Image (cartoon, rainbow, N blue to C red; front, side, top):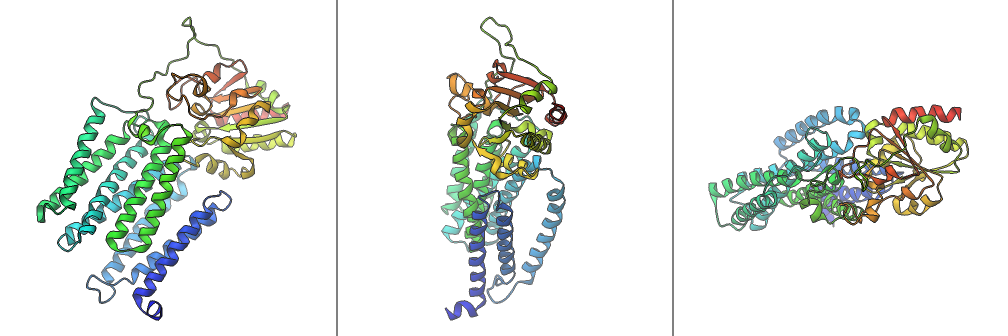
Length: 478
């Protein structure tokens, strides 16, 4: 014990242990929106301790500090700090999914490049276990990087959010995966050496990048919450593997926490959509469904009931219970402040107002909770789907704002629907339904929402922010 506290290695190990404990504690606090900010601060302190301890690592000869490494770390922190300061202050909450995708990608790219650098520099001195870690780090990190870039481009609408498929897509991906496996085993198993092994590792890197592209391009926007969770898990695993390569306990623990939490989140999100993870990755969801207007049995377009803000204000103002269902349309319009203002106004009139949050509302897990928290919506007003679904039948008005697929009753009744079996919010059971929407266009799943044609449903068309502002004025006058 005395040596542990009197030697530099012991103190560094103790610092990494403290950092790991703070990572776990921070993650625990992040499990609740009310303590998430505190959890983030605790984890940041842990990361600061880990970085500071790394300054004092021995040089490559194990005899003293490497001032070159210290200088490189400081320069990297300065570059990363400057590069992240602007977007962290300017990027709106609605663009957080894109930012998370980029963060995932940077983590994966870093893990892959560190693994390649280690192999190019120390390939003759690496143990078999370290070589296996290098190959795995290159594969997982590269897939995470290229997949995250595609996810970012889809979320940013730089490329189509719909599934992009091509002939023989799964076969090509399988061939690429087989190539990665063959080359990876050759390098990790020591069947090739020297420059040949290095060239093969670079080929693994290139093929893994290709596999990331080929895997995420066919995935539609409706599945992006699950994809982001998967890529987040991949990045965590890649970081943990990098920790093994560098013998850095803090990196191992941090990567393992991210990888495990991402894996659990992936399973929870897939379950919320009643989909398997394999179906999300290889199903090209929504690729084969049309998006035209709904038609009845005789080929005629089904009727809808369009109303004005003044019409919508009356049932809202005189209701006893209102449930608000926020969706991606609210996020796009950045209408979170307006919806809180409307809810506050209704509460002042004695209306019981609550928010129903579907597990995949928005574009990433927890996105809607963060958006509403930004507008100071009380966390106690937010209800998960399982908590509130039975209450729709006793609700006077369900106000749907830009939510589409998660309110589609076809998920319960239409066995031919691609979303059949997906748990949805029981909006159709409310006594009156008001839908705020730009147009009759379909959601990410690319299918018609029969809720819009329900006799109890009224459609208020327009930008959600503008419509809510009109509703606020109309409720004042009601």
